[in-house]
Amino acid sequence: MEGVTHSADMIIIGAGPVGLYASYYAGFRGFSTIICDTLPEIGGQISAMYPEKLIFDVAGFPEVRGRDLVHGLAEQAGAFKPTYVLGEQVVEFSQHDDGIGVVTAAGTRMSAKVLLITAGIGAFKPRPLPAADTFTGEGIVFFVPQLDVHTDQDVVIVGGGDSAFDWALSLHPIARSITLVHRRDAFRAHAATVDRVRDLGVRIVTSSEVTAIEGDDHVTAVRVAHKQTGEEQRLPADTIVAALGFIASIGPMADWGLELEKRHILVDTTMATNLAGVYAAGDIAAYRGKVPLISVGFGEAALAVNNAAPLIDPTHGVFPGHSSGESSG
Image (cartoon, rainbow, N blue to C red; front, top):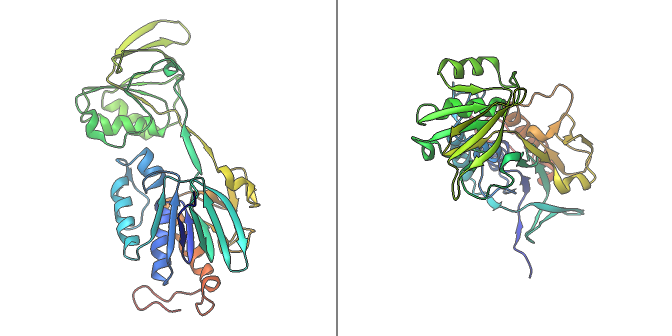
């Protein structure tokens, strides 16, 4: 069966903050866009992993909640009516005399003059909780899309990184209890965040691992054993948040002929890759001195769109004019 076909001036792979801003900026320059993502909703890692977390490095906002940032970016991009292709992974790439073509695993075909890759860390999946291998009930989550779902619950968070402690901070005001379990004595999380969680009185169990999960249709408790002494304790749990990190891969893009450095795409100062008409911005783009911040990604998106402009329409220059006046082409 033939898939759906879309065409635009620019295809953007990645519907996270940088991809959404790139779509807005392309619209500002007068170009149409298609935004595609393997996730079923926009927002990338923010929507999937920390929609309720506060973000502190976005210009103009002393702090902004992840979901609010995504909503604002979507509204901004929406003024130029991008086409969304969500829940589909782009698997095929080709270059033609008149531009670029891509095809998703579902058979959706897209064509454009240029391609901008803003896929963040690529496709990612959570690291599994070993003790959950034989548990078939519900109550084990890897992310917390909605905090209020866990109101008055006993929550056990497994992990020692920033995400684990961020969830502890976010859930503490509404949960009945929070217990954080980590297999080491030291934490990967920022020391100030660890101190804030300790100051709240959150129970922290170190040098320990979850060895068993109790419950039939839903989690009711976990068993935790100390790694050195073997001493075991039982913790009540309505939800287990397995904040153990994730495994990332750029997937089929690794076979497109892009110049790569580990899981990142090498770009020049115009955000161009080694493939004609293909640009990259955001966390997936790599160059000397790169700092992986959302604010940096926004600037890279604007660089990519402006430098791609003459390829899309030779009457357009790289410089867009000032946004406080009329855009120039």
